[in-house]
Image 1 (cartoon, rainbow, N blue to C red):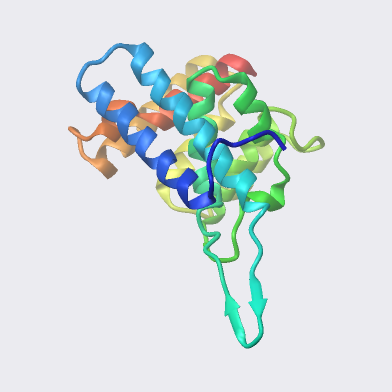
Image 2 (tube, rainbow, N blue to C red):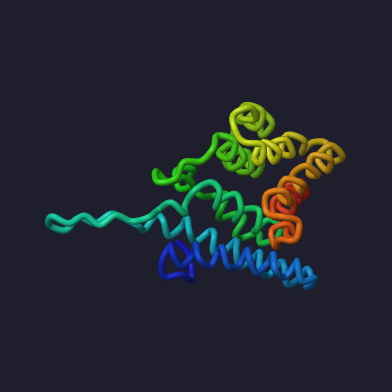
Length: 205
């Protein structure tokens, strides 16, 4: 495994959140796209480290004492955001390493996520050939009725990848949902990470 540059999964997850926040703040402040993309690249690499370091974590039992560890950061929400960040930053190496992760690494028994979010993660991986034999549209449509609106909108965009005009129209409600969720003047609304990530997917597949 390549060096992650972080001492622990906790450190990596903290850096992941900080880098996303910095990228959004840069966008909100009107900084150049280069600065925003540098933040996204840092976030993507920290997000990757969350999953790579999770593989090294084990619960330890010593005598009568049991030490449990928090693995909840390694979940599909972290994965989708890290992959969006890597794609939007044109960080091909990090994209490849995220896509190459084993599906079992993308979930934690300590974190429950919606079926629609799981489908977004799966559809993104399928778009890059991570799991052959399934179609992105099929995976997305199968889960579209099972989750909350936030993720279903992203699934709708993924099902429209073959038609760029329809895809661009599908991004509009994704952007609206992001602004509604975080607030019009928030760093997240300035960044619009899902829109950036999904558009980068369309450019690549």
